[in-house]
Amino acid sequence: MANWVLVAAAALAALPAAGTPASAPAYAASAAADARPLPPAQRLERRFLQISASNMRYQAEAAHIALARSNNPAVKDLANSLIARQQTAQPELLRLLHKRGMAMPLATNEHAKVLKQLARLNGAKFDRLYVDEVVIKSYQVDITNYERVALQAEDPVLKAWVERQLPMLRFHFDKAGKALPNAALKPQRAV
View 1 (cartoon, one colour):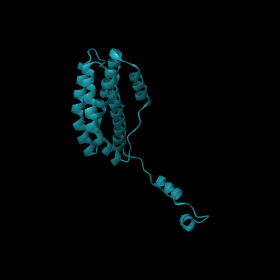
View 2 (cartoon, helix red, strand yellow):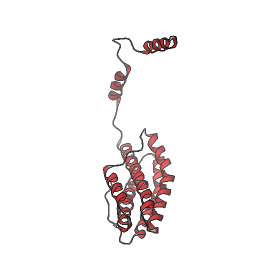
View 3 (tube, helix red, strand yellow):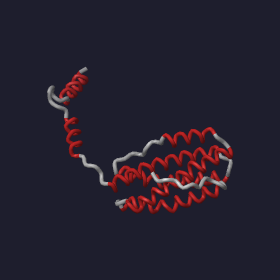
View 4 (spheres, one colour):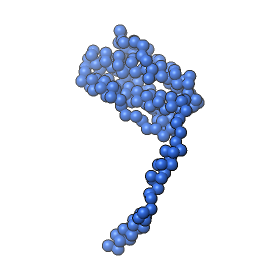
């Protein structure tokens, strides 16, 4: 009982006196007043990292589904290589995100929709959707975004990472085109 009284007394002593303004609102107000918009290059870098991380997560989740649902050895090989890329690139990507105070983004609605479709399909329909939507379409967007950031980013660490990733993205894109003949190789617009 005596210990409880001491704990309660310590907790009451830690509370601010009545009528004393709490420090959090003053801090938030001063932080908001001092906030300045990011320069365009930093906004580009942050947006790129957000999209890249989301796409990497999506591609890895879809690759795991492909390993379980596909019977095509070329598609399974493609999925294994995408998982291997994600395992090597994601730790570096996470460091780049954390350096900017960012977290790994959640899946987009479009990604979630495709993952649900993949989970319902089997056989040739699954292979076609996986290769067309997950690999070819998302890699076309990734390659375009990586090339743009390689030219416009100011952070030398980010530029070096992007330049290391581009050859692997192109390799997987080419591999996807060979995994299924007549895959949807349509030009995609960068985000």
